[in-house]
Image 1: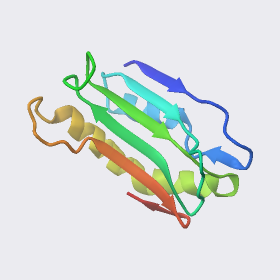
Image 2: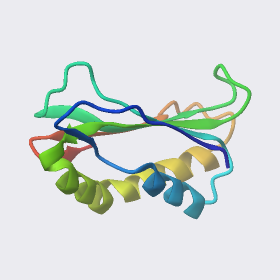
Image 3: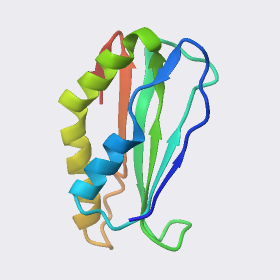
Length: 129
């Protein structure tokens, strides 16, 4: 599996919610063979009350590329919330994310199901997905 990571520095007072090694271990555990591209991002206008902290999208080979692939974005929370957000993600969102990955990899190539995204927001110190 190709696993590429792009991680720019973020602004003072903000921290990325997850380490890429958590996602890499999950993908290796599922024996994912398609490329995975991880990009860490900081929104231009950070709103600590409502922000995406994780975005995962499956892009099939028929949409602008040579092969199936996953694009994963890992966002920020306030540094004070980072540990709580990470633990909440691992407790509540990692399992649905893994099911999303498995589903994307096992659905038929000619499937008309366009549900290719998995998104997690951090709202008032709670996960929403």
